[in-house]
Amino acid sequence: MVHKQTSLINGSFEQAISALDRGFSYGDGVFRTMRVHNGLPVNWPFHYQKLVADCAVIGIVCPSAELLMSDFQKLFEQELFLEDSHQVAKIIITRGEGERGYAPPVITVPTRVLIKSNLPHYSTAHSQQGVQLHVCDTKLAAQPKLAGIKHLNRLENVIARMEWRDEAIFDGLMMNQANQVIECTMSNIFVRLGNQLITPDLSQCGVAGITRQRILGLGLVLGLTISIQEISFEQLLDADEVIVCNSLYGAFQVTKVADKIWVKQGLADKIRNIVIHD
Amino acid sequence: MVHKQTSLINGSFEQAISALDRGFSYGDGVFRTMRVHNGLPVNWPFHYQKLVADCAVIGIVCPSAELLMSDFQKLFEQELFLEDSHQVAKIIITRGEGERGYAPPVITVPTRVLIKSNLPHYSTAHSQQGVQLHVCDTKLAAQPKLAGIKHLNRLENVIARMEWRDEAIFDGLMMNQANQVIECTMSNIFVRLGNQLITPDLSQCGVAGITRQRILGLGLVLGLTISIQEISFEQLLDADEVIVCNSLYGAFQVTKVADKIWVKQGLADKIRNIVIHD
Image (cartoon, rainbow over all chains, first blue to last red; front, side, top):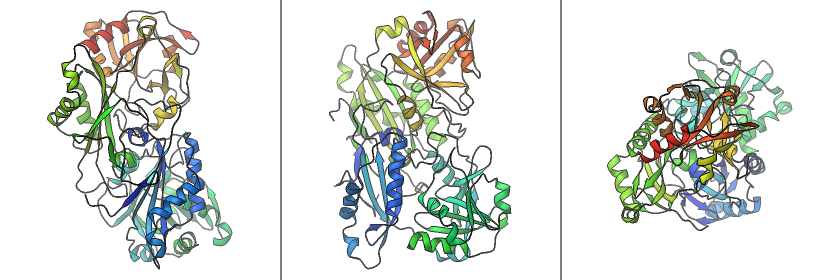
């Protein structure tokens, strides 16, 4: 396989991790995916804060921001001199290597991985006409002890993403076992009902992304009341507007879910301009 | 870290896997842990059957038994000449490498890993006096699409195992969100009520191990009626006997859970002699 990606493992230009790394054995770690503009991670303070918080949930001490920033400077050295370059950085922090067995070693040294890859091509149709969602048959399991964090146990997202191959579909809508809307396989979701903008509660399942977090703070800017509430699939279909978001594309309006079609409006574009270009 | 383990990756003596392996990125794979006696995997037909079945659930074509057996011969070559040697083999099968994103590549080449390690020391007290369980605060999430299989998404087991450090505790009892008994962090569980031997239903969560599967077929040998049923924590405490099992230690009687103490009886020893030495 030819890779357009390069990577740093613990600060060294390597592309291999130990088969005894607990990230590999058990998915015992967390990760972040972010845009890189001219060699610098976009929204880095939000990403680093979230990385530290997610590590803490599973008892990992996150490497320092200085260490991670020196990794960025090493891996994206060339991009620092480019005019208007865009890449993707993925940071993975694991608990480190361990012997066999679920109990972590008494002393653990976290493994940090930084991977560079190309920014996916987002068609102008996505921003101009909106995007279409598949309704996933795979439901998210409720696990309050791990909900909200972006850990490496992502088999649910994988099997949900395997449900479709139609390239017209942008993402897959995921519900919990009670058929409440939670998120999409790679996105968070908001629905607008009049001047209320609502995003689902993620205390039982789902990943609380930093773009969702940023949008939650945009009430005054957008002139909307923004809150976290339960959303049923029926409420989503009845909404005035549905918007998906993540750190790479910012935000897109959803204009098709199953048989339901929405006309294109302007809120997603406004949000995208704020969360990506600020 | 000094490793007493050695490993084969795709048949080669290596200890590193690609940081782009989907087993590392997403826990997109399955594994097995088994005893190796004089260089040969114990209960191999059961393990291989389960490996093929688990791979199939998440859409991976399991490498052939011939390929895996040639890996065993390579990694355990020295042990084949020993008189009475015991090791542990761990087989990991992942979907292979992939670019960023949950969608698997159209063509995937599974990664296979075989890791050799020492058999843990099981104290004679475990077999003679029985073992003690911690009652885990971490509850298992219900995910029927992944229940029963031994996939690489094992963060629940990790955080459950991190709940205790007392070496007197052998394993941790895990329940589902409705407080029904499911399994232990590294073991399956059976309770005996009179001449009924019962193990929990694993259609919503838990790992259906091959020792559990073997015990389910021992009804005639043991003179017991063996069945799969829901078991509440209260029913477990009221049981005549509680037994935990896995592929490495076979079976041990549980003689202490919270304040409840059971006298040592003979069923676990009988089962252990069958499932490990057959």
